[in-house]
Figure 1 (cartoon, rainbow, N blue to C red):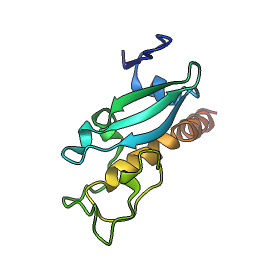
Figure 2 (figure 1 turned 30 degrees about the vertical axis):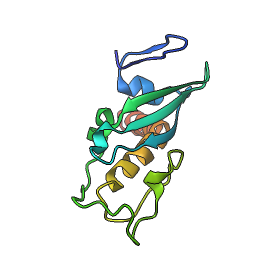
Figure 3 (figure 1 turned 90 degrees about the horizontal axis):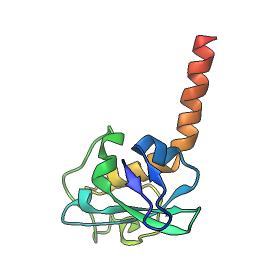
Figure 4 (figure 1 turned 180 degrees about the vertical axis):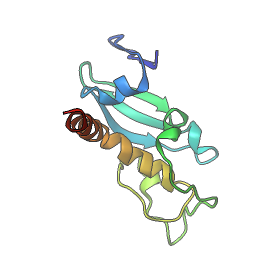
Length: 126
């Protein structure tokens, strides 16, 4: 099992089921600057209005791009996205945290991406 709702006890068997569920909506990211993978992606389970926290490490494999070694947090280059828990915007700064912002975009666009993949498969098999 990937995740169990702490309020209504709905269970999601795997991550794809969770991300494809229109009742599981990403609402934020709680950063852990010491280890970004220990930060939490925050989701609302719309069916019961519970907030669910899932370690960022469970989503790392969704991102295939560069991961920068140096943090830019607090520098003039920093846009401050990671400092605001409810900020889901991408970051174009070449910062250690930037890949997490890209994962947020992947999650936000998950349903649309899955729909596009399914349409492509149907077209290819027709």
